[in-house]
Image 1 (cartoon, rainbow, N blue to C red):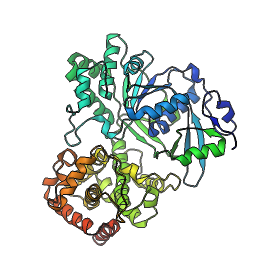
Image 2: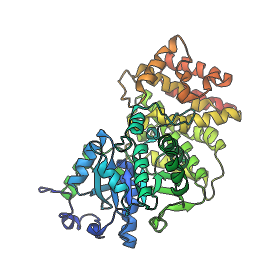
Image 3: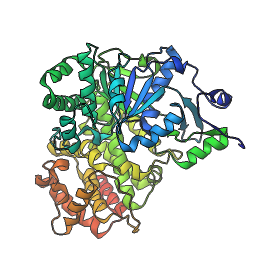
Image 4: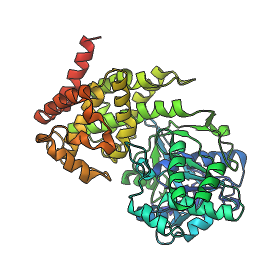
Length: 501
């Protein structure tokens, strides 16, 4: 279109003939939800569900206030403040259909990197009933092997010394809950929306560990008054690209500086444990259950681990997107065999779920040619993901003497990926990981010590001491370093299992 209009409350009516816009009164919304970590996933999931419930029930107490704690949150803060919290959600279907709508559930954003006081005031405000989190797996500050809270983190030490000027999520939650207790206000619910098994329990344990070091009485109050529901969240949400921004401008004359793209599938299973009320999310498709653990384990061990299987192996092979991996029958076969032979046998019973159909649906979702989820995004922060998604499955299969060849190939490939840092064609890999330096240094020692990489106990626990695993790992590692064409090794494993059925 020749003329473009920026996304704003004033311009909403101009877009109404082209795409769905919020019809609820955004100006009357109270901010019952404060969300820490406003990224693409939050905007395609919780903010989307909240938008739906505001449209359906017209309950004004459930607007969202976003919070940014890190310097890296400055850009999204600038964009959303300029756009008054509005943004476009672009849903891309496998058949090429595209559905776009403007989401209006985020009504304010506080950037707290420079000054945490406004964040603390908002979280201590009587209107705030839920504080939700998408802070990534690495944001929970625990040792992946032991599960213990990491008090050595310099920012945690700073927060303990400066409780009124927090830099971390745990300092922020503790300080704001202290304000609520002192003001005799009800506690808010702390609701994790991250891909961590037992995410509510983990959040609770980490917050109590920090709070006890700070103030025993406050920790007791938190333990008694604050609810931490476990939840399973699911919607593939790739990084926004310039082509997504251009699409909106050309199709609708909209200038949205940071839209979000996602797949049509969405799921949220959560325990109905809230301290101070909640939206009626069940009216818009959220499933409330007494115990979410079987559902989240299923999702983490199949979808998230499956993504990492494709990501690590796909990166070395030279594929750039997940759907490109799914156009290769070797990758498709290897993924399904991993899910059938190693992930499924260690799952708990999941009521109401047909696992075969669920795995079939994952194959369709991963193959969506319009999502083009980047391999580098899936591989990012593997040090925070793989211990929970993949290594836990591997360990359980060792305990039950089950299959370990598929996961072992991925671990060996991760070592090669961290060491050589190029694909099989010599092209440099984009590696994004908080432990990148440690991973690279450990992997570099592989030629003189084949177990150096897996001797990082914070990631691998005692795997380096398991004779069955190390025997298969060493052979697999040698094969990859000799021939980095991972497809050959994937085919060998598939052939082995086919001939030994």
